[in-house]
Amino acid sequence: MKKLLSVASVLALSTGIAIASTTSAYAATNRSGAEQLNIPDSSACKAGRTVLQGMVAGPGGQLYIVFTKAAGAEPVLSRWLRDGSTWDGASWICAGAPTSIPTLGHGNDLAYNANYLSQGPALIATQGSQSAYPSDKVTIVRLNADGSIGTSAEVRLPVGNISGLCYSSTAAGGAGKYAARRLGSLWTHPGSGALTSGWTLVKSNLTSHDNRSDQGIDCSENYIWNTKSINDSTPATGWNWVYQYNWSGGDVESDIGVPGNNLTDEIEDITHVGSEFFVAINRNGGSADSVKVFTE
Image (tube, rainbow, N blue to C red; front, side, top):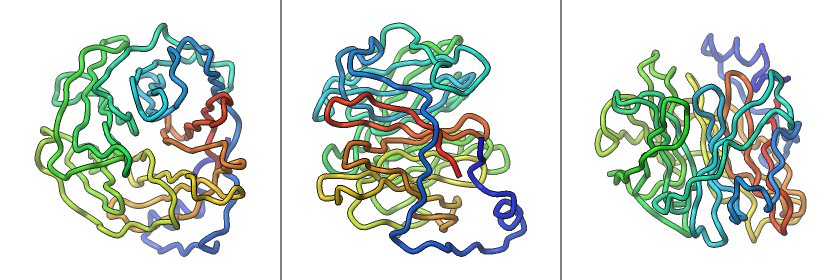
């Protein structure tokens, strides 16, 4: 399995050497690798919903995925467990029926905190999206000791409507840190404390790409990944995009491509388990949704 950054890139970044992108603004390399999950509309873990939304890796590498009906209605939260030691399409099983949580709203993105407010593990879901379903609320979903889905509650963020949210326990020297994206702005928050205050705007002009729609984000100790999907005005030959930033919003790598396949494959989110990254793909036109490896 390829790592996200080459050894040379990691060495350069760790020593403070700037890395300039060698690709043009519209060039792309296919970063969509092997399929890990194939989820048809008939899957019991979708409960009749047809639209894949946010996804995040939780305790023990479990995957949590939000599914909704068209127009973001009636969301459910599903849980997937690994069955076996290999990362392949046969190694995941649906952990029972999904849980209906109306307050997930659009469910555009999910973050995972293993000890939210020192009260145990929780998922944090954005209720809104970039433009169609704006919301300044997030839903806190408590997880039980085995990773199963527990109670939920709403929190209103002071930064306004956001569509991307992630948490890294290893950022900020191990203290933990949140990142939130609001259109072209990047906000951060310390790993401890309530989400109702304490946010800092770190950049208001994140690198973008024409008219693509912002989707979910992911973050690690040093980096943030921002996904941007195809939409109705994207050329049929267009790409989904992923941008890699540092925690100050500076570019590390931009215009990382995931094919749109004639507007069928719409990237929704990105997450990682250790050094392995995955992208969630909502496939239009009745095709099965997909989770794929994200390669260098």
